[in-house]
Image 1 (spheres, helix red, strand yellow):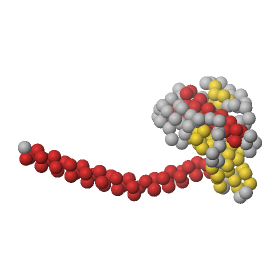
Image 2 (cartoon, one colour; image 1 turned 90 degrees about the horizontal axis):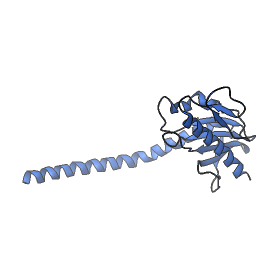
Image 3 (cartoon, one colour; image 1 turned 90 degrees about the vertical axis):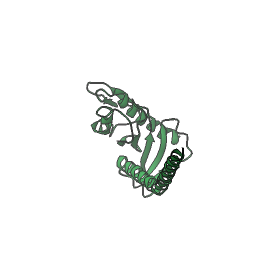
Image 4 (cartoon, helix red, strand yellow; image 1 turned 30 degrees about the horizontal axis):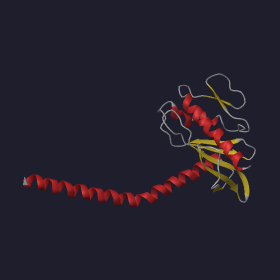
Length: 185
């Protein structure tokens, strides 16, 4: 009986020390992780709206969409160059982070696909050539997804086998454009 109590005490001490070490490590690394995350977000904004050098978050606005999580104005000096939106449309396996840059004329300056849990080899292809189809498109009219064939104006060809992901990215872009219009009313 004494042996079981001693083993229990040793196990408790080891578990307590492990918990303290993990807690301390979390406290030390949390600010670094937050800093790296913010740096990556800034880089994404710069990538999708390269003409802008400074970004100001639009606070307290109703974007008219649950999908749009953040909206920024992009400036070069004091001149407004466009907008960057972070959207979270739902794909096949969950939310797909879509960062889209919009010029003042409503054209898409760039698209970046962030965190997602889409199927490796299929839905994850949204990060490649697929997203480049959007660059230069005008968002004054909604963008549609087609499964095959030659796309017309404001149409993109879906990723083969990942139509749901393709539609999610397109929904994110269309909602970003609506949010910009809603904010500028």
